[in-house]
Length: 519
Image 1: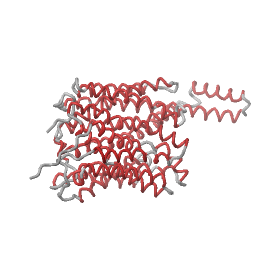
Image 2: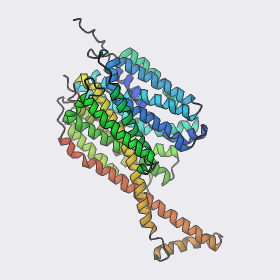
Image 3: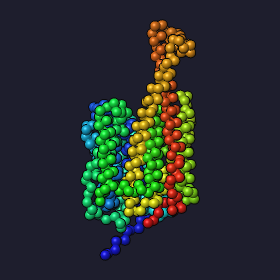
Image 4: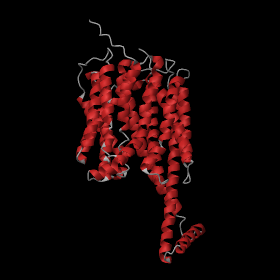
């Protein structure tokens, strides 16, 4: 039997840059469109709710393709799949920018999400194999910059482009990055010898069940709060489809000879614990990432672009800490670094829960900076420790599920955070509003002072009385919203502490640097 052709030797950092470009571009697009929605709606003669399907369609297509990426790469070849994914994503981005109507934009966003779904797991698998075990923690630190920092830069870049140019440039900026990534992928990335075009059967039933289950679940998570969850028949139908589809998919994949997703990888306790922790990381990261700009804009009066800039400290903390973590993991057990990261991230959310309506910029700066640094302490060791026991032949499949669960965790986090915030706001409004009566001396005195001030400015006494009541009620609503943000930040911080015991389930990586073991 002829031996496999020798793989060309390429500097692994060149490979890292090639896949980093693709990863950064794809992750950025999960948040960069958010601040542009009102402009997209106005330009395409649609409501903001209708324009929101440009986000949902992308997330649904992305979630469906993610778990299938390992199989697709093994069937068609990793280099061929990665090149096609980057080219398809870049082309779809340009087409999104050219879209003349909302239905056309949604169609191209589906294509963008489907091609983008393959980028994260493929680039991660390529990075893990390009570096020797001792350097893989540094490689994951570099790769992690794209995954952790890009969602934070998205709102800033999206807001700046939309305000200064047009929402269409939010998509056009992907063209030069995508072309550079395609060229570098073609020149410097090669398939390892064990990846050859597979002659195994194609699990069409499994693909169909996966598409229905994960797609319906993503719709429920993205649209649930907007539709008042299960008060909507549409949400009930999607939830039932999600439950049946995912259950049928799991049964099918465990029994079929040629599964599209190898679920038996979860039999490894370190991998299972790591995937669960990454799901929680996505839950809290994306949940808090959504809360901060809402808090800054609705309660603190920040414009959209300034709110995005005010969130930059989180990205700065991650950016500065990522290279340090890559070095630290060569000397310390990754599980200990993870514990420090979980405690640090929890403290940062506790600090955010101590904010009030008088908070200044630096009160917001430091908790976010610490949180960004803590996320670096979480992401890098968690990735390397989770992938340590996985054979390289299963790396594509393992990274696909790893990234899927982070994204689904993020969707659950956003849905949970918005719902909890809304419910807590209602509760605090009812509690505080119950005290705004003529029988409460403090409320009566405050109303009287407001009314007197308005009369002094020349208002009619009857009108001043009504304006005083409205002003008093606005104060109640602001305080209720602030209390709800406090509750939500605190709840997210507690989630991080609750998963600390899971670190005891994970085994210490075999490689000192926390890299992936060679098999």
